Length: 283
DNA sequence: CACCATGTTCCTTG
DNA sequence: CCAAGGAACATGGT
Image (cartoon, rainbow, N blue to C red; front, side):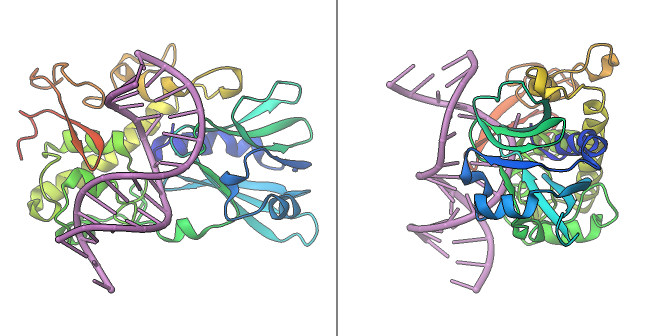
């Protein structure tokens, strides 16, 4: 469940639940997800450490901790890849099949499970340094965004997935933002007009903020069952109706565009699906 | 069996 | 050197 909004909602969910908790033991079942940190190193640093905060940067989770020994600050970096989930579970509950890392706490376990193991839980923070501006913060501004776009001839949809341009947009919200801005996903980044850049800048922020709102209505009770599908494609029981069809084009090939009823089209760009309305997004 | 999947990195090509 | 494209990673669903 991993683009910026999903990670943001998860960070808000975990923050109050992890703060003040101490790690008793570290169990690594799939060392690959720690890379380049070793299981020994992770256990050495985290054993006895206490969570002080959980924040987000792009699609990354940052777990701030204070170590037992020297009281030094450390940051543990998490990324969900395509299929990762991080959640708290009761101690006796059986581990999921693809549990990659278990952090044992006093009363429960913090579990990182990931079917495809594309995600990360590591002490290596280098990936964060490469990220572009946070789209929902003041560091993301339309003018520099437009200047960056001018440097690339890639289709705008593909360019939006570049995490150095702006952090946190993934395959779903790239299509959604372009639909909202009325821009064709095939348009070369450097050929967007100034009004288009301005509309896209606003659309990115609106789409991401709206998704965070929606996600905040959904119980993230991963330990009890599968709630991740809900996150993208549904809504919590009792949530307002306008959350029903949150995604306007993604995964809706052949269905009528909500604005003009023309069928939504699926194309492939950089080996990934793009969805758009050929009538509302002509250029 | 074939194809598809919310992501990132690495290698190759031009 | 750089931009762009594609494969690889690994597992499961349809």
